[in-house]
Amino acid sequence: MAEYWDLYDTDRKALGRTHLRGLSLPENTYHVVVSIWTVNQENKLLVTLRSEEKELYPNLWENTSGSVVSGETSRQGALRELKEETGIVATDDELVFLGTARKRFSFVDIYLVRKTVENQAIRLQEGETSAYKWVTLSELEEIHRQGELAFPVAYRFEQFRTVFETLLS
Image (cartoon, rainbow, N blue to C red):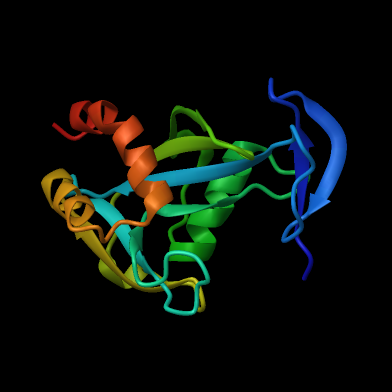
């Protein structure tokens, strides 16, 4: 099924146009991506292993993320991606907005969800992820040091490290 994104200008004003995923974005246009960090009852972060089938960053650890599709808000996209990739159902009230990171062609909205999650509730999305684990902040830092964290996730983690340290201390 074709996936379309809403396009925005450099100030994140909607352009009233959509874009088909997979094609190069027009110059000076952006789409919205969501990045969701799930924290469980043990104060551990959920990371998933990208499928070996993925073109970019196969077999590297990541948090839940994905593009917001046309017609969705950032928050709706975050809740959808969380459910699709992990099986975790969260509510809008459980989403905590941490901030936005602007990249070359996207605005990445970063969220945190603090939720009691039993391991049997995790349902990995076939073709996207192949494993998961719950890690402490120091374990995530070690994964990062070993080069086992997908580059975009490592970059966002670096940008928001102090926020994570505060929230998870």
